[in-house]
Image 1 (tube, rainbow, N blue to C red):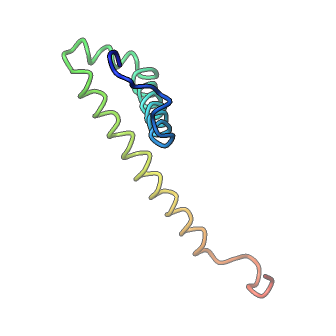
Image 2 (cartoon, rainbow, N blue to C red):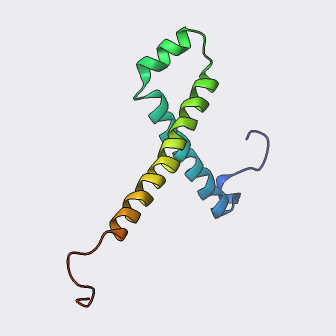
Length: 93
């Protein structure tokens, strides 16, 4: 910052690491939203949809799928797998 004694060296290490992590996370989500779906983004932008609303709507849908649906599918598969009868007697292990 111009006109002050601000320097990266004066920043606490944990705060600097938090800024770096936040930068990486937002970069990854931005690449996923605007990189792979570039044609859909351009189409929606040309139709009048704002960039912020497009980002938040697609990010919300990815969040629901990534965290909720995958957790439910994984827990259902694990529950189904553990409730099946083992093909060997339980005294083996």
